[in-house]
Length: 298
Image (cartoon, rainbow, N blue to C red; front, side, top):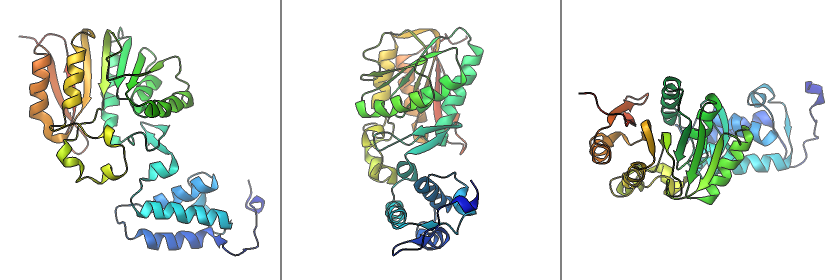
């Protein structure tokens, strides 16, 4: 589309130039030093249904009153702390785009470590066929792994029906209906397995820490609160898995950085013969527990 093809408005009351709106919005956004200016361009591109680069390239565009009203409303939500992905209804993860809403946790870069680890493990275990993603939320873990590895079929579970609706949207978006199944159940209670690979980014934040975190103001509490020690659901999952794994399976658990010692104790209680590795994230904080159920070598 050429610039001459863009609609030219006669600046009725309430209309504005896009560039003028961005200047004022930048000034308002200065109250949030951790929020990047790119968030404003993302909001503008989303509202105008244009590519991400478009608002910067077209400051002369005439916003109509309805567009101004929409942008002002979204800016106010952003200023009150509403996460940008919820405003856009979308979040990038492991090179893919995922629909998100307030029923699911926003996918985060640190969780890509789990996906990368799963893909490396699958490459070394070509006979692996069945995997589970427990507490799937948006489905980003199961769908990202399945998109990059056709050898494995996933069963993705969640207790929340509304979370599974989001995962269903994303499964359709990435054409993975034949490779990823969705089941509403409590962890793996309704499933027998046996599984070769189990992935889980369960709630792991200790209850007493929840109130101190900004994330708890906007994202679903059920996806964050892991009980008094943060390990309540992880403990239950490990208990279920003792009868649901193939030999030489692997379990990948995202964890809080402070849980290294208690999670090792927990794993040893359920799987005393397993090999356990704790991997750090990009910030060099403990982030991923890798449990390989093959016997420890003497």
